[in-house]
Length: 75
Image (cartoon, rainbow, N blue to C red; front, side, top):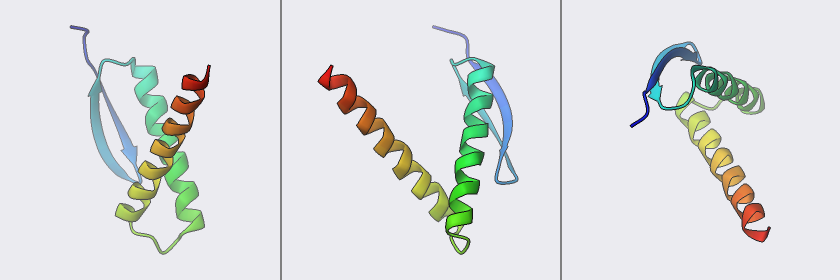
């Protein structure tokens, strides 16, 4: 079993700790990307709650994942 890395970061001004087998650099990059995308969504939908923004981000991420998987399946 690989060693888990723990990283603390903020998402929309709330602190979270995540633990995963990915590198600390990967986990920090994940925090940065989440913040970038949530900030972008907040700009597009300023009235949206944090929960709504999180759901929109999850939908976008899963949609991108499905597109990438379809692309891999075609090759």
